[in-house]
Each structure stands twice: as structure tokens, then as C-alpha cells.
Image 1: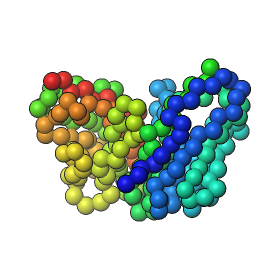
Image 2 (image 1 turned 120 degrees about the vertical axis):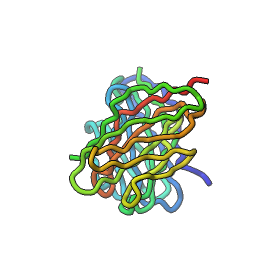
Image 3 (image 1 turned 180 degrees about the horizontal axis):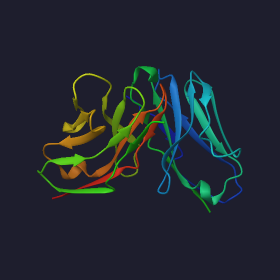
Image 4 (image 1 turned 90 degrees about the vertical axis):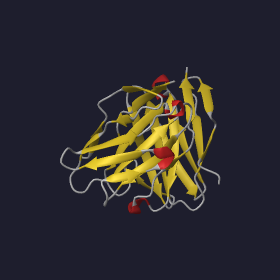
Length: 115
Length: 112
């Protein structure tokens, strides 16, 4: 079965550029989560969606970050403009009916480097 | 607020020996606890969870975890470690119906 698919796997760009990360959740999953992983801060939840609707974006660091989920099979995380401190590994995860304590399934992440 | 602590940055064990990766938690109400593993350049993979019931929870790849309410701990264990178990392990607690709070992670190194 296909898992959570993220693209690109690696992204290197210069500061000030727009960055778009993409995620395809597992089919049938109704929750989607975006995380950021850094050595300093560990794993942080940025935002999550339920049935394509953003539920909690309190983890989004600032207005430069935005996320959308136009349909059940696609989500984007956008950074504009990007800064070196945004360098991190960004993970997307999905789950089915999280309220019933189903586990989250993670993609393999996008390693983002802002020069 | 819910939280988890993983007191060890790294655990070293010889192949074939038992391993324990420690996790303590702080919650209000019933704890919902999880263990995930992360291999290099990969996302987190679910290992096991405790919701209610037996204090010994069995999971993937021969791992198990022991829930101890009095000590507020949820330690991950395996009777016989493999070199391939070397990875980063995360304990997590559910903060609400939807959010997981992850520990800082423990690197497990199994030497041949």
C-alpha cells in the first residue's frame, strides 16, 4: 500500500525565495498533520487538518508560513519569503479518525536548506 | 499541559542483550501513550500504543512497552536487541483528541 508521499525529498534554495512542500496522504485518511524537525527544537506540530479544514494552526511560526488542503488527497506547506532559520526537515503525516487513537503515518519528509 | 520526557539522549547495548528506552509522562486524565521509531532519512514509524487495559503492550518488530501508572513511565523494551534496531526512538503523549506531543528522542545504538 502506498504510504504518505512527500515531494520534493530535498530542496535547496536561497533566502527570500518561495518554497512549496507537497504531501499526498494515505487514501481514506481524514486527518493531515504538518511537522517540522530540527536538532534544536525537536519535532514540532505546525498545523493539522480534518476533512480538508484547518483545525489548529497555532504551531505555524509566523505569517511567512501557510498551508492549504484543497482536496482530500493533496496538501501544501508554503514559506514565503524563506529564511535560513527555516532550514529543517518537514514531515507530513496522516491518520484515520484520530479521535479513536489511530496512529499517525508519516511521510519520509522534505529536507529543506535555505542558503 | 501534557508532556513526555526521555531522559537519555543515547542508549548503547550489545546485540543479543535486552534493551530499555525510558519515557516518563505528565498528563491530566488518562494517558494515551505512543512509541515511534525513526530510521535515517525516513519518517517516523508507529511501534505501539497504550490506551487502556494490560500494562504490557506488544508492538512491531518484537518491541514491547510497560505502562506504570505509579511511576508515570512508559518504557520501551526488547528482550534481545538487533543491530538493525539502531535508530532514533520517540515517546509521545496525546494532548487532545488530535495532537501528539513528542519527547526529544533517544538514539539507540546496538553494537555487534
